[in-house]
Amino acid sequence: MPETLFLNLFYIKRREVKALLAEWHTRHPGRIASIATSMTHVVTSHLMDRDRFDFAGLTGPAPGDIAFDEEPCA
Image 1 (cartoon, rainbow, N blue to C red):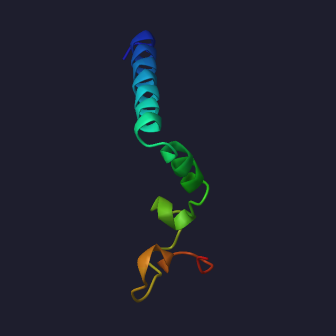
Image 2 (image 1 turned 90 degrees about the vertical axis):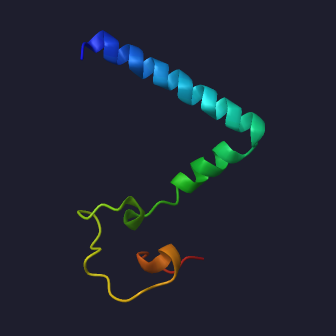
Image 3 (image 1 turned 120 degrees about the vertical axis):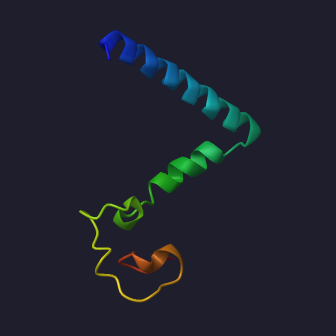
């Protein structure tokens, strides 16, 4: 793919995401802030990356997504 075409598609997608975020802000105030806050609470097990977390070593069922957390959720 030529670089200029790639850049054009990149900027088109950027505008689409910007429009989506603007619509969310209008229809659901606080959603963007909530998503941003959620992104600060991600732990390695949430990424589903087998190189970063030993999923195979887990034993037994655990409630919710706290199964992978090193410390209990507050």
